[in-house]
Amino acid sequence: MNELFEAAQYFMRLADHRQPSPLFEKAQRVWMQAQKEPLNFKYLALAWMDPPILFGRETFFVSLLNSLGAKGLFPLQWSTEFLKVSEEWLIAQTPERVIFLSHNDQSTQRFKQKCRQWWPKNTPPCQAVPADHFARASFTPVLNLQELSPNSESKP
Image (cartoon, rainbow, N blue to C red; front, side):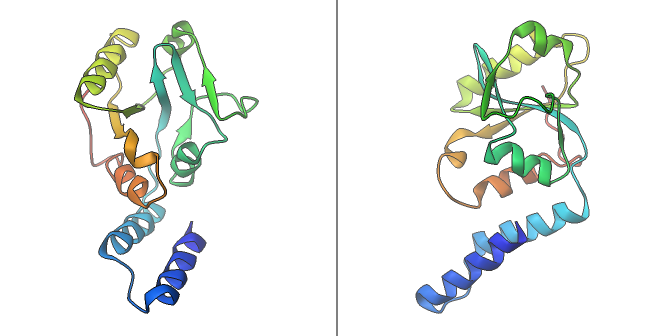
C-alpha cells in the first residue's frame, strides 16, 4: 500500500505539478497510523445479508482489512471473491466485529437487526461501511476503515 501512495503522488505531480490533495494526504496519514497501531480484531465482512454473502479473500476490501491487522474468520481454503454462507454457519462464528456494506440508513438498520438476531447473547459491534465508497477507485475506503479502529466502537 505504501507503494500505491508513492505512485499516486508521482502521477499527481506529473499531471499538473501540484501537491497531492488534502483527501489523499489524510488517507496516507490514516494508513501510516494504522501501520503503527494494527486493528487486531477478528471479523466477518458481509457484502449482502439475505442470503448472507461474505467478502472473500480475493477482494480488495478483505485485503485492505487484513493488511491493517484484522483477521477474517473464514477458512484458508475459501479463496474466492464472494462466498454465500448459511445463517447457521454465521451463528457458529464468534466475530469481534461484523463489517457490512450499507446502501442507505434502512439497510444499516436491517443489518444491525440481523446482527442482534444472529448473535443475541454476545452481539458484536456491527460497523456499516458505505457501499458507494467501495464502488469506485479512491482513497475513501482507507478513511472509512479508520472508523474500525479499537478506539472507535460502533454499537450494534
